[in-house]
Amino acid sequence: MIEKIKNTASFINEKVAFEPEVGIILGTGLGGLVNHIEIAHSLPYNEIPNFPISTVEGHAGRLIFGTLGGKRVVAMQGRFHYYEGYAPEQVVFPVRVMKMLGIKTLFVSNASGGINSSFRVGDLMVITDHINLIPNVLIGTNCPELGPRFPDMSEPYSKALEALATEVAAENGIKLQYGCYVGTTGPTFETPKEYGYFKAIGGDAVGMSTTPEVIAARHMGLPVFGISIITNAAFSGQKSTHEEVQQEGAKAEKRMTSLIMGMLKRM
Image (cartoon, rainbow, N blue to C red; front, side, top):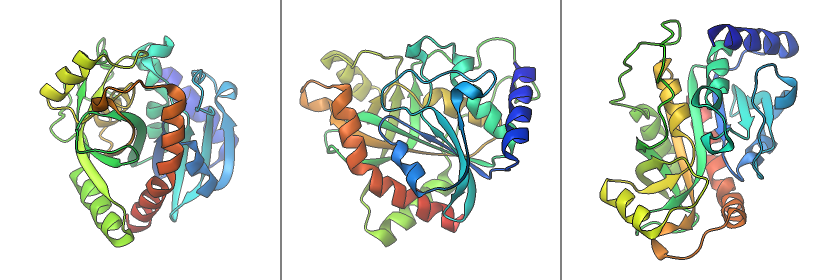
């Protein structure tokens, strides 16, 4: 796997000659943030050796290189999921590659269902911790070149970046929620009893992504900032659809973009 990662990073370096400082993963319906990037290069996933291909509606499937908030960024416009049939190491392959390309920080975003009854559809939740219910991406032979066999996870999401987000949000009148994200395999939305279980074990929001990428990032020593857009109120008992998730994500995207741009300017 390490040779594939290096080969892919070498291919990208030859194509774009661009060293990013920050990596950004954009979740379902959140790809519009790239409209604010001063794009220098764009690579479709299907042109990148060893890259998986996005199969989910709302995930454009491009790697974007450019400037955002005064920082050189590489943004994944669309991510990969375990439920698409990819092995965990394939899901996080782009994170590994971005690290090889030179990123020092990773931003992750997602659309999620609100478990906490104080949340409302459209809220932005800063992820302060997670509960991973997806097979752990580090199962198997460890590659010391990527990270230690038993990586520490006492701070999966950077407290310094969380504090910065709080400052930027206060200055720009952006309301934030804070909570624990539960990562599940999907692709089914959760049953009422499953929502009850996730709430009982400490979850505030639930989704089908993010935790594998964060585990891989922390394995490699990358600090992470995570944010969820609450696109459906799981606790309400109402039915959820993928279309609804995309629509609500798009509505809240402007506030998420303002927050991320403000943070990048201050980093």
